[in-house]
Image (cartoon, rainbow, N blue to C red; front, side):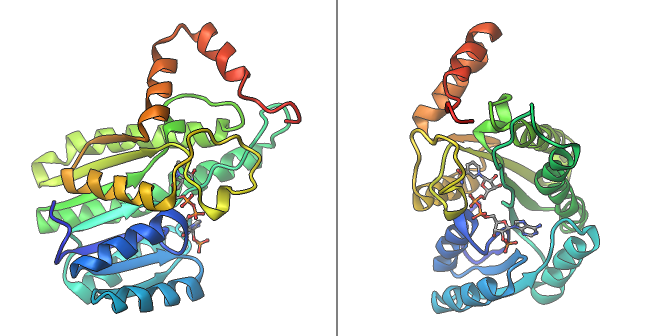
Length: 256
Ligand SMILES: NC(=O)c1ccc[n+]([C@@H]2O[C@H](COP(=O)([O-])OP(=O)(O)OC[C@H]3O[C@@H](n4cnc5c(N)ncnc54)[C@H](OP(=O)(O)O)[C@@H]3O)[C@@H](O)[C@H]2O)c1
């Protein structure tokens, strides 16, 4: 998809990767709908996007609320007539140790990473079915391919997202809806700066945004990056499980 003169929804746009993607997209005369909870951050971003001569609509919303998510889709359509593409980018993977975690922590993390995706996915599919076209992208994570130490709840939520997107890609093809999952390795965003998780081969937000825009433009079903971390994950997936588990144990910090 050529990402110019398009109506594009970015969920999780108030900071980090989503914010930089929105800024990049605003350089190409797009109509952007930006969503997150923090209204002030969104307001500031609207000014920056409009400064780049794109139109921008701020839709503050808590994506855990299905009615709020559906109303963002509705507001976008009321304002611009349709939605050509959506990047469902929100999520977070704080460190959890499965020997100390609570049930609530695990289910809340599933809600944050998986339910929020579903809350946007379903109304977007309905809208795009009626338009007979559209592209839905999701910011997953390389952690969504295997159960990483310190990342159990996050890895499993992202794995569920990956599989749901795979089904959507097959079922919605006849309606002209395409699905892209992007899988970043470590990205140096403010949120992860002090989270205690080692971040080998970390890349900048700008580099991550460039990769994501490439994945959207080329409509890659699954786009993994950066190269080195991607290949470590691919290797872990083909190694016998006792070997990969042993190697992953070595990644756990002593004070964890
Ligand atoms: N950073 C990494 O190393 C890394 C690596 C792999 C994958 N990822 C994935 O990349 C995506 C973006 O992460 P990031 O590092 O850029 O994090 P970030 O800076 O924390 O951005 C997350 C965005 O989601 C929004 N958000 C969070 N909860 C929300 C809710 N309930 N309703 C609506 N919006 C909500 C946040 O805004 P508000 O707080 O204003 O709501 C923010 O705009 C996530 O899916 C993450 O899993 C990140």
